[in-house]
Image (cartoon, helix red, strand yellow):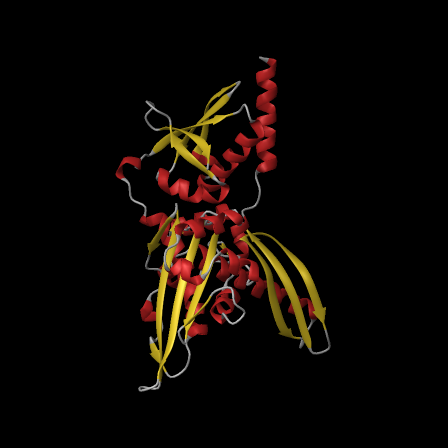
Length: 365
């Protein structure tokens, strides 16, 4: 009995230590430039206000659908500072004519989610598993991938913002990567070579963005072909990510730079829709039971913390605690497949317990 009480105390204390700020709600490096044309205290106050506004804009673009962003611009009676948990002035430079500062802003997840919930706006805060980006460019009948001349790679990397929900890994342009896999092998759906390539970088999925740009000498126009594929579980699947209506397929000048900008933004939108696209009637539970193996206490605590970050503390109720396992009743609108998609970056997933309806346990990939 004493052992059980001691284990429970470790369990609850460790949870408080593991509970951390969600990185999604932390917006770092907000740069502010102003004229030094009045009292410095007034300038600092304005800089802070602008930093909060810029950070809120970045956050909402990450967690809301584009259609819902329009609704926010129509709301006038709310103060952004009410959602700020804390902030930090990282850098400040003041001259006779100018003012420059960098702010880190941390928003309160509960207040943000509550605010949007009251407006019937759904937030999406699920961070994706890391995708290896394979940016293939074909120009003048030549394929480019890891070559220095692949400026399609450069444009995509320049546009990528690691503060978003989609995590993208860019393998370096190098001779080593040229030897590991070529553009031709990927175009020919060489599953073995790409699987080995992902294994080398300890990743499970790849996002292939193929662009082909040709010059039509007769019409004197650049013509573009764009294709996207996902590689996972040793399979290539062509998918529709980027709306081709957003760019010109034929133009007087090269469109690759603007297409890269559009592509990265569309990838972010595509990921946010993945949670909503999952549909499996058999997983439509109002509540499930989740069992954790506490024989490996530190591992089970980390797993529990990941679940709590997704569904919230109030939706996770301890129903059984013993020397060896804990069972929680979980209330959630998410389906099991949706939860598993959100848990992918942590390399864990929910699996059903045989012969026990709505009971699940945690497993690693």
